[in-house]
Image (cartoon, rainbow, N blue to C red; front, side, top):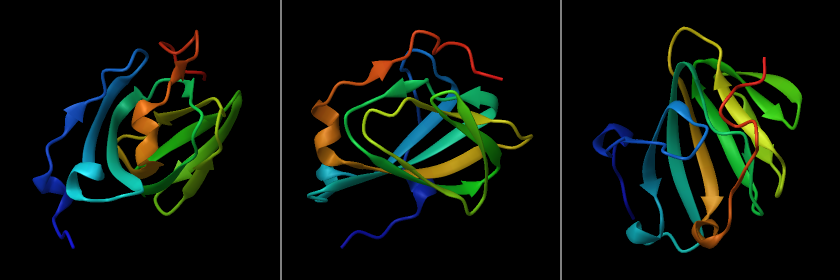
Length: 129
């Protein structure tokens, strides 16, 4: 068993092309003995966003704090604390912070995702309004 507080895990900038104002904490993954899934905590600054991208694996998201939107292709869905999202494999998506405080969310992915290709959309460096 592993028990820890998320603030004890270092935040690192998301350096993927198309990310702005986005940091991640790798809370649980294979290096801590989790055989199947990784849990990450993202923090997106006001006005920031993740890259617009897709990948061949699903992931689940739970919004902890803040407000924002998630793009499902070109469809925009509003998000706030308590909302959850299932991103299906190969679905183009992007998370944007539309609020005045950081947007914080948990994201769970299979450990096997580390070896899989992520495709960044051509327009990844600019958020859709």
